Length: 556
Image (cartoon, rainbow, N blue to C red):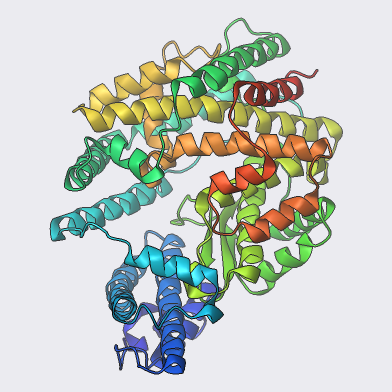
């Protein structure tokens, strides 16, 4: 496609993402890979054919990723929306054509395209590519496209809600007045209430489209379809008994401590966050402090961080219209990671930054070993394990962001309490998902169900008079939309990260082992990675993990 058909070509000054898009578009015009779709007969020619096709595939994959980032930078821009749709059509079609050409060559010339020089990962790629698959019908393809559009609408909608979810940032550890906390909490919930009808309609459409996808794929319902893809149903009775029950008991004790400290008889939802201590003011300050923190974890990490900053592989500023997502993208052609955040200065920003840096470090280290087009993709579940582990490794260094020990101790405990709530939210979300995808529920029935399910996992928090807000919380969990069925995997991964972190603290493993695993387990499965560290979800292991978590949370 001609460059002058893109809206950003009207400007002479381009941000880093657009500059990368233009660079790849220029590289794409130099490709002649689509001129000849047939694999040559000579062995050397076949190798050249594979590499050339692979390079083109990686370029088109990266262009699609960059246009996704470009849209998320301003979801309200009609020009960006048009550019994104055009790119999805043009580069999506080119990618499908190239992939089909390569697959056809593999089928026809299988005995001669298994080049040892490409390594065992190439053999794995060939096997996976040629594995029998049920061909998707045109109807299924269209439904999946529609479901993806609904996801975009969801993130655009939550980005349009003015966030009042955090208390005003302060520089001390003093709790804010209860009346102020209540007003802020109510304002936040009113903002979501104003969009309630839009969310009702959107979720109706998402659930309906997912039921259609499950039916097209021969699954009993969408939950069964998700479990089949994940090859497991993580939330078993054993998992619930070993994890959920003790977590409820720990949360009850945490809330008892909080009631005593605050001097209240009823713990209300606006008592759960009583302060919001500023960790940084400007992005330069965040950069400096974050570089120092990861350097404390290991001296090799600041160089990786600097490369992300120096090459413009980030978007860190909060802006109107920008997607609310915090994420890290893999760029398959550049063999780099791109970090996407909206930083203000609070504790959540600090931990989100560390988490996404964990993904980025894993991706960049993996690309040292996995550098071909056929093995570029880091396993997202495995990458989550490394990112969650980096969060835990950072806890003893959070004082870098804060003015005193009391503030950093507060930040550590809030993070650990968040981990506790991950396990309880896992039970809530998994139970809710199974119900909404297996039966027909109206929007009102869904909200009643979510309220009942969530109420089991609130500890001593008293929502009397605010029950309506509980039902709306289902709309505030992005993973319900972007990664159905994933929350249970996330909770399982969090357990593994806690186990590995405790093993590092005890000297069983070292930070060098952590970095080595990051590099070696690029696209390995979580099971393979867990086997390497000796993590299994038996009762004793889980009990030890939760006892360690409780000890740190309940420490005076």
